Length: 150
Image (cartoon, helix red, strand yellow):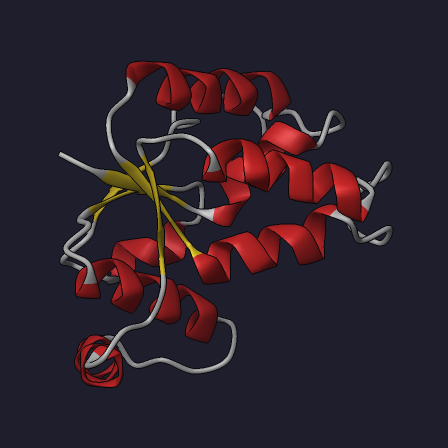
């Protein structure tokens, strides 16, 4: 069984000011240790690099080298798969967005959902409730028990 991580999990694990920092860090460390195949979409990776280095988002943004080193740590693990669009992706995206009307801020989520669907990944760990709109995904929130607000 494989799963995917959404960008917010990676961001919380990189933001020491986040109320989810410790839990996100521990969650990612458990994903690394358990050796179960997990996936990251390239759109997730690029979003991480954009947001983690942005001074308007993080009080202490990562340097580009720090952010890239975090991604390279994952890239070098034998049980991590990086997913990209392949032949036929557009049709999967069209099917996905026909099922869930998509515009504005939902477009990047639909992109990731379609990418996961295209590669047969059904479980997504995220703190973003918008992914619940995609019925083919098994959306899991690793912070569901947290009493802190995002």
